[in-house]
Image 1 (cartoon, rainbow, N blue to C red):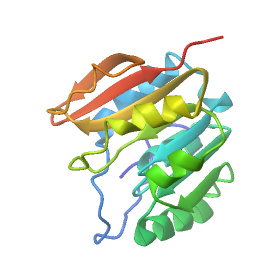
Image 2 (image 1 turned 120 degrees about the vertical axis):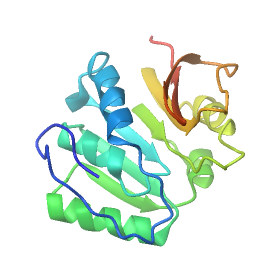
Image 3 (image 1 turned 180 degrees about the vertical axis):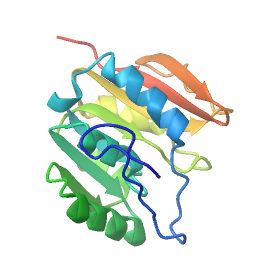
Image 4 (image 1 turned 135 degrees about the horizontal axis):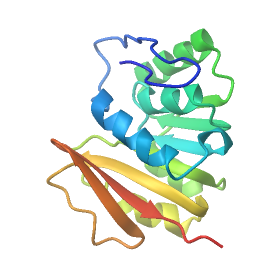
Length: 180
């Protein structure tokens, strides 16, 4: 995995091979960040990365100067790896927590500009995530929830949905909080 842009542009990271992850491809990640950069000033953002895995998306936000990144994953190996990268690359704006994503969403009381979620594609509860995010008010006004999921899964019928982008077997579904 490679950091595409920002302060740490070009750094290659090699996650241990035994982690239960499917990192976002560089092509999809680059497209996602082009969309985000056309809609947000990334250096002003607070970001929540759900099912963070190797931290691929979190590192990209950190490299591009996001103000605060909270990365949540329940796998101890993933959390250990992310913490090692945070320390190695001195990503002081990034916090890593070992926790079940659904437990976190049910008890969270913070709000974020961007929430990104890349759950295991086989997880049947993916469509529940937008409801939890919006019920708890976890997005700041004008904030976005972006879910990466298998292209065969459709989320465009859910409230707050406004766009989707397909990249082969992966799709990003976008949801928006109303601006004030």
